[in-house]
Image 1 (cartoon, rainbow over the protein chains, first blue to last red):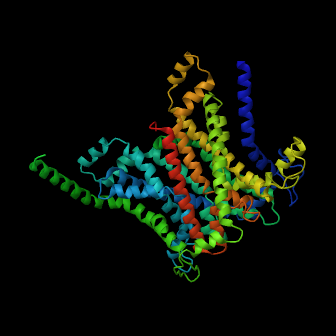
Image 2: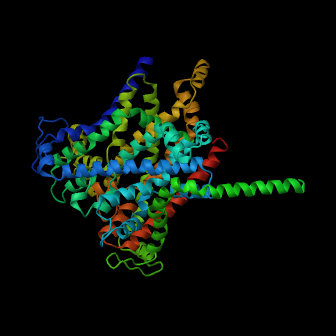
Image 3: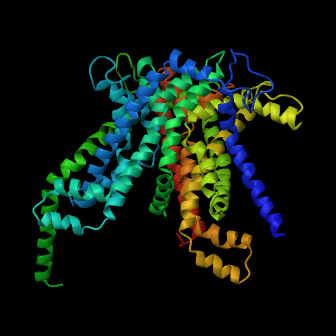
Length: 281
Length: 315
């Protein structure tokens, strides 16, 4: 009886894994093909050959290198400024008892109830007003970075404030008694102590920005030389005919950095899930 | 309370208030950069969105004039009922996908949690869709559900397993297309729910399982009487996130159907995008945003009250 149960357990688990892996296997297999607009019948689950011509094509004949560079730049800048602005702001809320603190924090929290995309139209118009010319910051990398950092401020401040408020105050008080100000306390004491939660924030920010599509499409969609990888991959799908092997090759190349990030920081992805859960529990 | 102590208290309160006002200066350095950004990109847009939804904003002239409820009326009376169909599809998406995400997320979390070494491998497999971008998986699903024999699903279901009599044009028909959109949503989000449940499981003491197994409880009983009740607040967290997330469905629809046939697979965010950035009807787009926000608020309030009355004072 026990052996039967064990057997069922493994069959269910392996079947589930098959379902989860199949689309990826399918993508990888077909990225080695050369369809020339004609799809093979029956479709290939396993590759008929190992061939990198599709990869060669997207790397040399498409916008992929440029889009990859844009993605890297936008993602790194967004993560850097997000960490900077949010940790400063979180310190202010966690450690300085200023007039109006609770009210302001409640306003920040209230904005989290609505998903960010709802503001895309006014955000688009605001970016159009900031900056020179008729289109302002629309179509520029700086505009998209500003938008990402700005829309993330409330949630990230909330996340970091919770962690910072939970840290012991003794060290900071020692610094304050020694004549150091908040500035010293923040850089010398708080940043090192809060580093685990700050790096969690940074990793999730990197991942979220790398794959963000909606705002990137709206803000950068009109300027080919500034688009990011998700926007590029979406544009590869033609209205009438599609070279699927190119799409899949580009997708795999675009996905590699994230798989690497996950492999290196696996623990953090899981541990932060823990923290997130406990905040809400 | 004597008049003296009242006076002392009053003075202390005043001193604290003064201190808090004095603290505004050091706080400004830390809080202001974030506050300015939040005002420009979150708070002002919220207010501005309300105004746009009641006006006919012209993008080229950058002009707006008040038109009352015209945008809303236009949306609700439009031929083809795209708005109502979108609202229906968003709610259907929430109702259909959330139960499966919660169920499988919990089951896989418990299964993976019971493994010793292989756990990392299985956890990674289930989490892989979560870290893969929507655009990428949207494309893969579009190919897998291709209409003809070239589609993997048609090939598997008709030619290999013989479940279907004929090839199905999955993405060209309303309900099969919606089914694919739901499947993609379920498949992509199970891993996220699993991670949250895994975290929740770490919080349950092993003593409970040991004590109950000494008293002769089966694995199934342990699952129903220990695991499920103790993970209730985790379940609520997953539920709220998934239901609110259901109002943000966009890329699946854009990549798989574009809302076709005739808007019957459309969703609110896709309609907002289409109105604003394809048709340049900014007023109507903003109105869709307002309607979505209202639906989310009402849904959240309803979920909160249902869960509270059902759960009593446990959570």
